[in-house]
Length: 444
Figure 1 (spheres, rainbow, N blue to C red):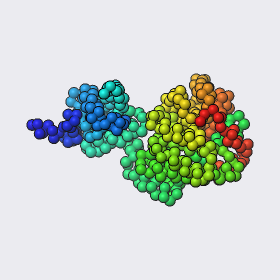
Figure 2: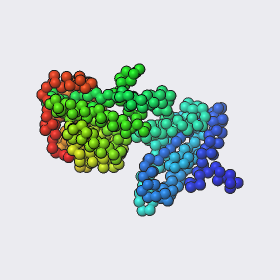
Figure 3: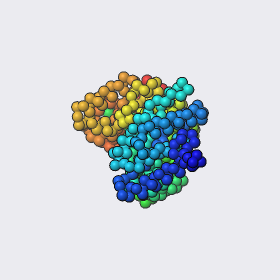
Figure 4: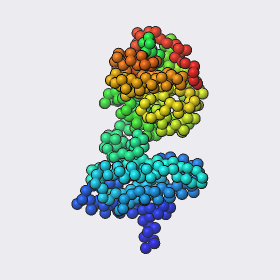
């Protein structure tokens, strides 16, 4: 009897192991043929690895035991909590009515784990990202149910939503995505990636004050693909460093050409969380600047607000190292991630780009104008400049200028352009601002 228990349970936590989870799931699935759908939940603890790496395995083990205790006390009678290994847990709900009920259980589990855990006189904050897959809606058997709960969990992690239900269109493991991934590997070798450039315009006199470099994939069959179709796939793969290298290696020579021609405007490049978590990034940027003879102020790096919210502590050393190179920094997509500007806390950010979802509101409602106006005032008080993203009409452009916004980007001025077309646009629109006009000198 004892041997059978050991064979079916995790030694550290006493929870069911994978073997018992498979057995129970198969039983539940056969019963579910006559009844309603059943649900598999997958849990993964964010930041658990840090605890193990920092404080060692004994503390990590006690943390896992606490987690196991909280999970078993948060599920309903009849539900099964299993440990699949490491910091990965699964919860089987053998009788569940619908997706909403599964979400309720998931929310309860997250709340239970969100309470700080005190070990060795220290408080630990853990978060759980929960992926839900339902039988028979999403999968007919245990393996696929687990795999699809896993996919949903990664979506929850990536979007910081906490809980996600499996959705086929978000499944990066689908055949179409796998085939696109192998093509992307080829695209990096065969130079199919290309940088487009969108001008940034001073709202006072409509002169060009900078550009943003935006990657496109010139796919041999599918035409020019926008970044949202392939960049998320790159971010989850080993291609990330090659991709970053390619973007920098294409953008810097173009900057060097423009500056040699007297078009001395900074060009911004977007950085993802994965890039900012790479400690070698400042060295890659520094080497690129030297190799192409580009001054640091000619490059600008944009960091999304979502990344600052999710990874602020982890990416701060990289941000400071980039600023030490003399490369100006911009906080992008402001207003989408609940990031308070006060939390910039001395970080060398010169510019805040207000997300287009907020910019659109200034044309529609007095409330929208009030909110955006307050944000612009705060940006100014902190000694930074505000830039509006996604400006698509003259009305929005003039309203943003009246609210105190310094510059704007958007199709009202110019869409993202190939390098040659961007050069023509810049020459036509004249009044080129020199870098000294572009820098405020209040940071960095």
